[in-house]
Length: 332
Ligand SMILES: NC(=O)c1ccc[n+]([C@@H]2O[C@H](COP(=O)([O-])OP(=O)(O)OC[C@H]3O[C@@H](n4cnc5c(N)ncnc54)[C@H](OP(=O)(O)O)[C@@H]3O)[C@@H](O)[C@H]2O)c1
Image 1 (cartoon, rainbow, N blue to C red):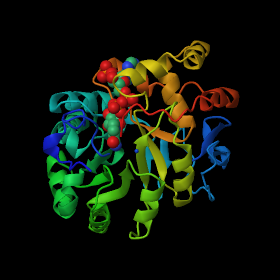
Image 2 (image 1 turned 30 degrees about the vertical axis):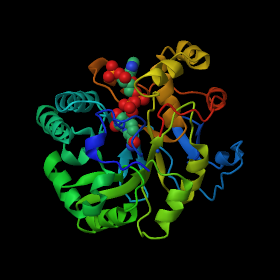
Image 3 (image 1 turned 30 degrees about the horizontal axis):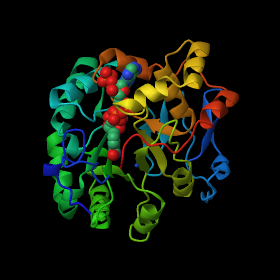
């Protein structure tokens, strides 16, 4: 397996020599502005989902939050900052907070944590937002797993924060368990509020759970209409772990145009007087996935947050759920 470190990946997270960096619950719409945890996952056609009792809390569409298994509330939609420079990340975070988003997703490897911190401070000052109203997620990169305790402190310094709301292991790696245990120490020390993983699948979760005490609050994986992650969601539901979707719109590149041009999506957009992107995001939320659409465009950010004035019916959700084809747009 190719050794991965910060030097041999580019800004997009792709291995410079080709390929991708080593590295991504079941709910259904019901009633008014509510999502209810259900066992629907068991109907996964690949038959390998083994859903136990779901311990994932329902999404609250009034507060736009979900109660995590860590006891903290997490916003269900926010801004992603992959591919954004420090200056772009600062502006996107500022615009996201201005528009009402309260969730921010960054990562060590994006190289923009300083910009994210600046955007947070600027928005707090200009809009009177309190730190405790903002939920900041960042991630530990694999090459830093061996020194994860120090990384937590450096991360706090770079972001200019006293605590991080959610820290994720970005990918599996040989010493990921040690890194997760360091994150557990970070929770005990009050530096981290919730911890979780990204790009972990069923076997990775099982391996993790054998050696750690804090259940992941969140699993952040590539999840969208064409790759609905049903099996792994069924697997993490008994842990109370919530799915958070990266590439919620399909990602930069062919994914977003493929999903936004899908006929079911465009017809539902017309029905509801919304854009295809808003339908894609509303599906995410009603499917029980936290969504972090990435954007460097202020009007797109506003549009992405404007998904709480319409609701997809159960029949419409079914039409969208039927589009799952386990097609990923990232190659890792
Ligand atoms: N854990 C992981 O391994 C991992 C991997 C990838 C991503 N992530 C996280 O997940 C976040 C989301 O993924 P992503 O940003 O790669 O992909 P994405 O959110 O699926 O798509 C981003 C693309 O959507 C466009 N867009 C956003 N809102 C739009 C709108 N309303 N109308 C038209 N276009 C719109 C953006 O363009 P504009 O900039 O022009 O708006 C950008 O090209 C990332 O930013 C990052 O925080 C995590």
